[in-house]
Image (cartoon, rainbow, N blue to C red; front, side, top):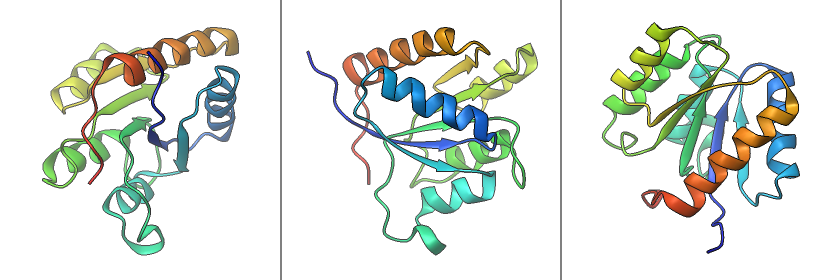
Length: 145
């Protein structure tokens, strides 16, 4: 079985986390295309393909941080799941929060998975490898529309 490249939207406002996530994907030799947005409003603009994102290819998967400016991850998740054009997208909450109420709120809001970001890069590489195996070899994602 070989991994299929998927387009991923990473909604993350922390530049260090963006670098770590990109490096972990590269170190794992993953062929995914990762698009980065830095706040919740920009994430929704990208997903709806409006404004400067008109004409972009829709992602097959969303990695969503909870703590972002303009609209937080919970607001973005709520809008994704309320939109008939977007609700099919799997959303993975990727955050530093260990709070049980954030886990419950994420799943209640329709998140497919909740992943707590490790601080250590090697540990994060392991998380990315496991994530990649599941989302590219095991799970079947809907075709982007």
